[in-house]
Amino acid sequence: MSKSVIEPSVSGKVSIKSFYKEEKTEMDLGNIIALLGVWTALVAAIVGFASHKLNVSAAKFAMESQRNALFLSLRDRYLATRLQIPARVYSKNLIIHDTDPAWPLIQHYWYNTFDEWYATNKLNDGKFLDLWCSYFGPATQSTLQFPAMVDVLESMLNGAVSFGSERDSFENAIRALYEKLPATERAPSHILNNANQ
Image (cartoon, rainbow, N blue to C red; front, side):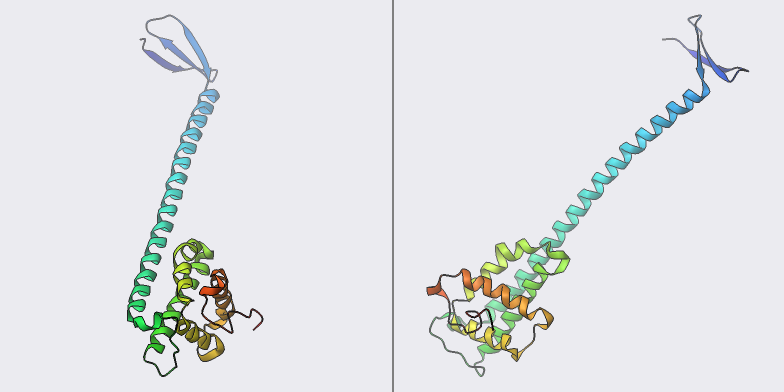
């Protein structure tokens, strides 16, 4: 390996002299600056690409964390609500009235179902819609075979309570679940059977 010395010259060229070889290589100072510029740009591009990859990974991790937190929060609320409803409500023969102590518990169930639907369908531009389609929707669908659950829902959709400006959208989502049930498994419903109401 040889040692080199860079010597400036009057002409603006740089002379590289080797101690072991008697050769002289002349390089333009402009070429050296250009090579340094290319090298700097290459390093900046690599750093930029790595930074972008890290940002994408961080954003994906944050979205998955939000999805998990939302799922666990909604599931915990669902379980707490569901456990409050007496087992007799899940009978295909029960006729319920608004004086029944289970009525407000079922209303709470439907408020919670609205929250599940809204959080998964409307918030974050529907990025969590898969949670509704794969978990909360099917869980809700299974309750649509019980007359007491449907009677309370119909009362709420008829205006006894409000789901705000999303009432019609929520009703359509529940109707879609209802219509996927075999007709023999559906609880009787005036609203869910009639899309024009």
